[in-house]
Image (tube, rainbow, N blue to C red; front, side):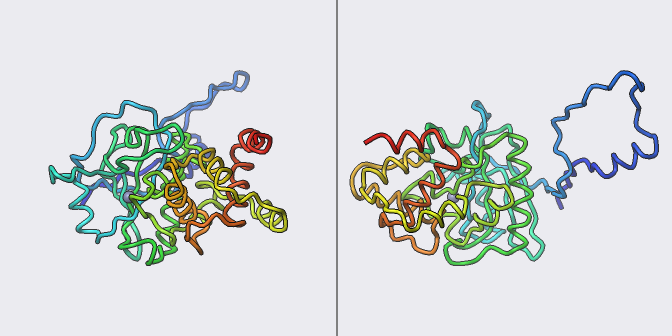
Length: 290
Ligand SMILES: [Zn+2]
């Protein structure tokens, strides 16, 4: 079995302080606040799994968190993600299992870049592997099979810890399908984006903002939809087909009930609400630009 990595427990610290076992500052001069790079207590336990050859030294700052489904069983995924196949050199930082009590298995440390994202873009980022942390979740197809509550719970703890340690912005917590448009469909329409966002992980529009816009006249022109998608971060390919493919990717994340790629009122309203919430200046500029 793998050795366990445990984060420090703040409860223990309180007990130690209460028992007078932790050094005290003088009553007059406040002690400097100790800043630790170690994870704080989150209830998260991470197992060290087999390492991966699908990794290289990290040369760029981490800005993105990318979520995937494995499309394979735990055993086959752990085998593949060791990156031993020279024709298919892949790797990922964390794997979340599909067991009744899911586990988090670490394969690549954060200070290494793992080969999990491949070609694509998000905003100005094109070197996706260098700027991201990747999480693979065991699920044969997240567009068909729901993620368990227990998987969502442990994902929340894992994502929250990664986001806090690397200061990753909500809109930079993305699906593989968001950044590799037309190439990837994971982690799928069943992924609990709304639930995670309600807990503070990832982006989601304010419900009231979307509800209030329902009776407003919406600009459904392809030009406007393209501008909104690009402003939010999507890499939209040229032409009608490129725009439709990108709408599908957007809907797979933010309007999973209907991923037909059509520019409709609801999709545009959600896009506008996302921009208003997370990029208000950009949203404002788009409203005045013809
Ligand atoms: Zn993927």
